[in-house]
Length: 256
Image (cartoon, rainbow, N blue to C red; front, top):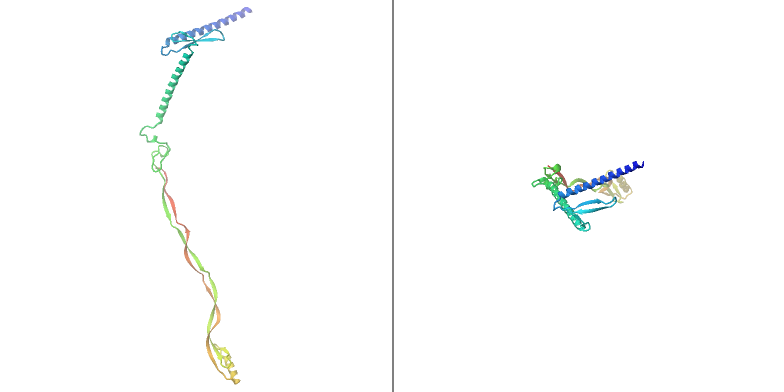
């Protein structure tokens, strides 16, 4: 049983050693290929790793001729070479980006004589400008046209009362005949009937006082009359609506 285990261990160790040997040979072939393809202008250092143990390793640098370079003395030169290489790569990348940016700018900018590239697609200028895009492409934008319509002031005839209606009583006069007695001065209305005065005069005569009289024509109020005075007024113009100006749309704004 112990012999079988020992054989397994020996087989495993042999496989590991063969694998390590294959790795070392592959690295040597790779380094030789790099030396054959390298040029003096490139002068790039190749790093070879030599395995001393399972946990430690040492990196040795060689120049283009295959000479081993001390890591302590080649540190500064290596840093300079790496920096130069990085700077060259950065410069190349910058030029590539600049070329790409110019290409994008060239494709975005309009060609000479292209009327649609000078302004934005939806931009419009009032008063007859042309638009480069949108629904107004190829047409002219016109502002709305208005006209001013004047409306005169409006009036209406209004009746204004100057004096309200009223009424009053007016006296009625008649001409009457009055007979005046000379004996006693008594007056009798004899316009329609003189019998009263005749009896009075006869009494004076029977008494031996004599008789005598005279007649007077007089204007006497006999009644009143109601007079109705109608309303008095006049018509005048009253302002209903002041004069005003109206802004009327003649033609709508749009592309045409």
